[in-house]
Length: 80
Image 1 (tube, rainbow, N blue to C red):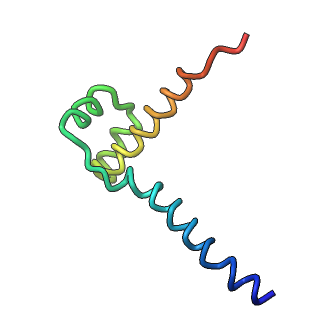
Image 2 (cartoon, rainbow, N blue to C red; image 1 turned 60 degrees about the horizontal axis):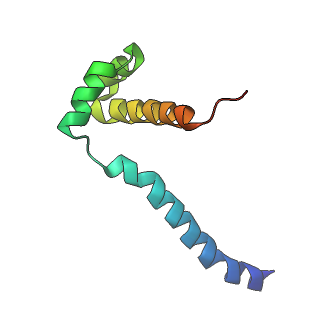
């Protein structure tokens, strides 16, 4: 059992690090002026509230998530 743990632990740690890098990459990307202008013109009241309470970074992240989910829904073919 110990030998199995010794063999499997390094690949599992590396896999975890690779997944976390993918998760963190969008968080490190700063918001550009065009993206901020688009946010201000299309933000929902909840996103504006997040902007007021938590700052631009969290509000832009919430807005990006909403926009990405909308794009995913539009890309799916309609169910007939």
